[in-house]
Amino acid sequence: MYSGQIIFSQVMSFLPMYPFRQCVLRYKGNYKTQKFTCLDQCLCMAFAQLTYRESLRDIEVCLNTQRSKLYHMGIRAPVSRSTLAYANETKDWRIYADFAQVLIAIARPLYANEDLGVEIKETIYALDASTIDLCLASFPWAKFRKTKGAIKLHTLLDLRGSIPTFIHISDGKLHDVNALDLLIIEAGAFYIMDRGYLDFLRLYQITQALAFFVTRAKSNFAFQRIYSHSVDKSSGILCDQTIKLNNHQVSKDYPEKLRRVKFYDKENDKKLVFLTNNFSLPALTIAKLYKSRWQVELFFKWIKQHLRIKVFYGTSENAVKTQIWIAVSIYILVAIMKKKLDLKQSLYTILQILSVNVFEKMPIQQLFAGDDYINLNTPDVNQLNLFG
Image 1: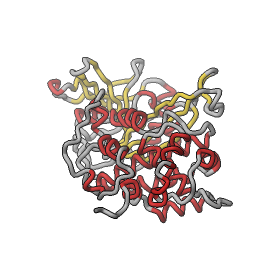
Image 2: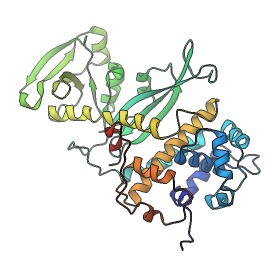
Image 3: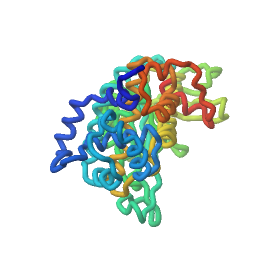
Image 4: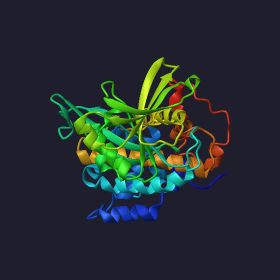
């Protein structure tokens, strides 16, 4: 009979504990804490994410019914909803934000060789934002509209592995394009963005940082064609042009030449116009790069459906940000585990299996050894493409 760790403990064993303790120490997370430490809080919230708990009472009841196993889970203090609520309100959310960056640094090299369907060696990022609606009466700090509250997740996604490398949580009023001011641009990388980020002054800063961007042009876009390149229209490329901006103020914001690629999307019967500062890649590759941006949309859809970030366990800004960062950390942790154990199942399937087996005592490889796991609930098959 297997006498080792329970499944939950085996999953948590992929957490690098020394960096976690450094993050706690940096923000004095355990200052004046006698029993319920940051690690206890993190493990309780991780349990809630993995098992789809809906409330603090739900977490308390489920953990206390397995009280004899709490020690084996790494939780050293009694769990009550008041204790957990107090920890979420008072322990600095930046502990978990910093720790998520540690996990991101571990995960990205594991997915560095993932195939994107585009022959580019450079790093490819997709930048986008997603809004989570909140009740303004319960979350007065999350300003959005007069009678509505919301927060935004501004996310930069490394498309190799769909690993979020940058997340900024703001109130709903912050415009998407302002996220560009927060990024440290990586030379040589590609930044794929939709029309919401079409600000030529900010795009020129990407060019000056020796990076590349691909975005959509707006319908009222004014430009002067300098040169037209030959194209193969059977590939869907309608034109490939070198252009300059016409508008006086806009041309001051972006004084250099741009490339304009017009593409016919046969599947959706739409004509799309792309702008980029890269003049060396084939026009069809530019179109494929923009198409890969949809991975960030799938990422938002995926985490909203499968991680607990739409129902919050607390109403303060600290509690909400703590929950989001721990959710992101669990997402990345399972992605790390998938690679390190060479698991063939999708991330969705892995989380579903974990959710009903966290208290089982068996080797974790054995849990995923069967190939009979079939996802019967697939309203949108595209969302399951993350991590294979």
